[in-house]
Image 1 (cartoon, rainbow, N blue to C red):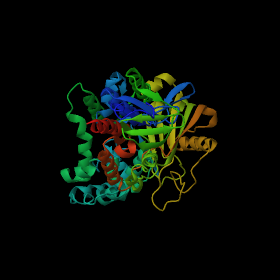
Image 2: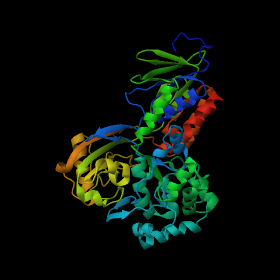
Image 3: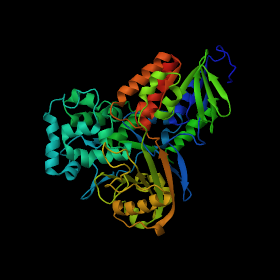
Image 4: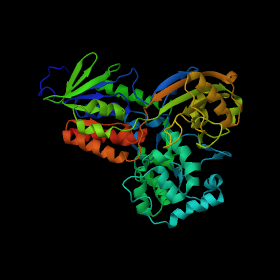
Length: 496
């Protein structure tokens, strides 16, 4: 596609800016509809936050390593790409939560850490008698409490209905680990869609959580949705792929190439302009004209590209996501064979002496990875960085006001100390066979309070144009399940 193409020639052509999961899914939807498609990716790697790296000779996920099973979207996509047999459940050990007084098993029957039953033994061990008693008051509160406002934060909803102990001990660690943010700054309707509606329907927050956990259970036997439902009923709210989630990107790329999609990496879009026949995208190397355009990059970058052509988007620029660092340690430490903290640990922000927000014991979580490493060798992933609550000290770590580590060496030293504290087993530099740091600078979608209304406004403006769609986690909600469920529908709407 060149800058001289006529309007007639541009019919049935598309340009997608961004080669993350949302951009690749958009391209797949276009080409399946017979639209000639070009994808422009600024970096050299495809898949965005679903990437890979090699540590101690192991090809490991460098970003997302699982997907939520609350819907069948990812399972269905995997099946379409020939990966249905590769879907695996994590080991049943479950995760733990690090509290100020020490570690506790994390209840397995919650949503965002919100319990379906305040009197579940695991919940009571974390909350104590008074905490469970306060949380149980949720059942007799009016369904309107926390559901009437146009927007509310996760923290405000949980605190009003179940109390501060549920918020601090269960919800904050889960939200920090999954969304890299304090629950007081996240829009509950974006990170837990349908939860407030569930309160109105079922009468309480606990009942709404229980209903979401049951959500996939009515799937027809043998379907990918039924497989997701089976994983959920077995106590696992997530699943993965044998070999890692990055294998999904590899299969998706192979599918796109087979279908004739043009994939151009190292090609950042510098500007976009409206033309008589559609859109013109300028890069450092060339210009690309197409009848329809999909912008599939982070929210601030997407608005920056489009605001000159659509100035009404300028006031809808979302907040940038937090800078997150992931430290992967491959260690030779037979003491970890017993998985002392199950599949990993989420850290309550007030826990002293720990800077990480989460630790995943990957070889304890995934049987396929343990088979590859063998006894005594373990893969640990520790993550750092979260969006703080309003008024919090900038750069504060997961536990207290200490400055978060920044350099690779600082992160490595912090990871050793945190792994030792969280696992209850000393992890020293001499135990490390190899390690790596991966940084995600503002790449995680950040759904601050009122974000749902901004999303609606962005999508309304794009729909009015008729030849433009904007997709990605900042609009659909964080996580593979949300992106995979949302992106194809947005492209189908654009094509219709």
